[in-house]
Amino acid sequence: MLKVGLTGSIGMGKSATSDMFKQRNIPIYDADAMVHTLYQKGYQGFDIVKKICPSATLGDLVDRKILSAHILKHPEALTEIEQQLHPLLRAIEAEFFAQAQKSGAKFMIFDVPLLFEIGSDNAMDKNIVVSTSAKIQKQRVLERDDMSEEKFEFILSKQMPDHEKRQKADYIIDSSISLTDAMNQVDAIIANLSKL
Image (cartoon, rainbow, N blue to C red; front, side, top):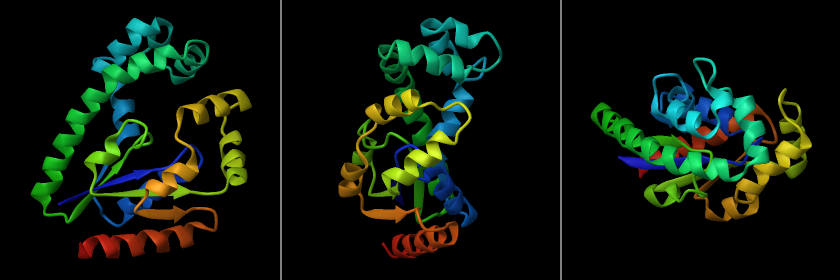
């Protein structure tokens, strides 16, 4: 069974594209959703954040707004969290893959925002990058509730530039035209991957 990485910088349309693969019943490991689970009280991610930014763990779930504000002031905190969180995520990824193999699927999508940045692309058979223009990207991101120019620039600084991701991709999905157009691109990739 093929392992297929799906990634794209913030605001590129990766989440919407991931949903399109789900609609086609393709098995998906969603790294962001898994982090959300691990950030609940009683899970290891919550305890990791508690040691680094206790004020973000006063409820039953890591407060991402408080954590984001802390990371903006203390960028090294992000590195510290990632170093402890990524091994957990890789173990969960392996379990998801084992389950998908039992289902008889031909390939599985690994939806990982920092796929190239953390070197997970090397473990994939193929990689898909979702992309759009810098103008559309910025417009989409700044429409988000908890976003500022400063936060957007900080996030971009932690991500590989889009043009580099595109060079590393086996497939590129252009999300700038329409959802229907993106879905047609997804269907073409599914057809191609099913033949491999």
